[in-house]
Structures are given as structure tokens and as C-alpha cells.
Image (tube, rainbow, N blue to C red):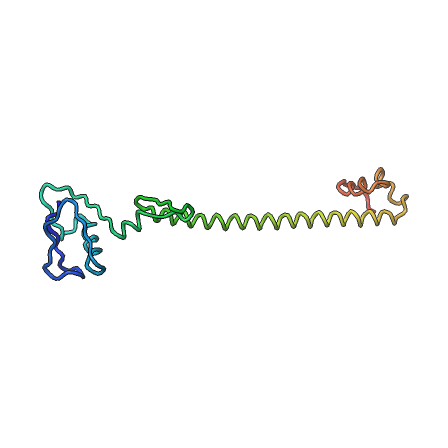
Length: 173
């Protein structure tokens, strides 16, 4: 157990000031600027030379101050009324929030990419349709005997004719 704490050299206490008559569990409270945070920072380092221990003591100190609360408690941004408790919970929640923002941005980028892909596929389909129509119109203007050797079986059907553009046709037209 802590028997005494020398407060000399701290911003809120006079030189030679000591905190004594401590118990196993101590609650420190007071108005703003009275030295609560300064004391808690001293207590967080059990090896601090300003702390005097009795000879049979356990040197484990738990300090529950604003710093502890900021590090150990975090509220969920997504689940109202849900709090995470534990060492590092606040930083873990901050990491989760950062990853959630990144995920949302990636989902938005994916949606935009899919939209762009759909537009390009539609444009490709429109170009193929336009090409098929131009080829059919051009075929209708030519003498059948000129095309017959190259397009056997495709002269009477536009569907068959436009499908032949995927075949390798020998010779020139």
C-alpha cells in the first residue's frame, strides 16, 4: 500500500507538500485545476520515486481518470447506446470507424465502376447493332452474284447475315 506521495515539483502543489494517510482504495476528487490529473499521472507509474510504499505491499495501481476513460471506453457510432470497454477500446473503435469509411468509399467506387461498365457494354451493343445494320444495308445494294461466293447461305436472312460477321471470310469483298 502507498503510505505517502511527495508532491514537490508538481504544478498544483507547493514545495514540500505531501499526500499521506492513504487507504487501500482512495478516491480523489476536487474542482478543476486542483491537481487530480497530476496525482493520477504520478500514481500511474508505480516506480515513481515520489511514491513511498509500505514493505508488504502490492505495487499494482489502477487509476481511473479521464485518460483511462478515453482509452478504455468507446461508444459505437453504429449501435446507439453500445459501449466498448477495455484497454485500447477507443483506438479500436476509431480503427473500425476508419475502416467503415474506407469500406463505404470502396462500395461507392465499385458501384460507379459497375455503372461505367454497364454504359460501355451498352455502347458496344449499340455499335455492333449499328455495324450489323450498315452491313445489311450495304449487302442489299450489291448484286447478289458479287457476294454469293462469299456469303453462301446468308443472303436472305439478316440474322444469318449479321451472324456471319463472326466467321472468318476468305478473299476480299
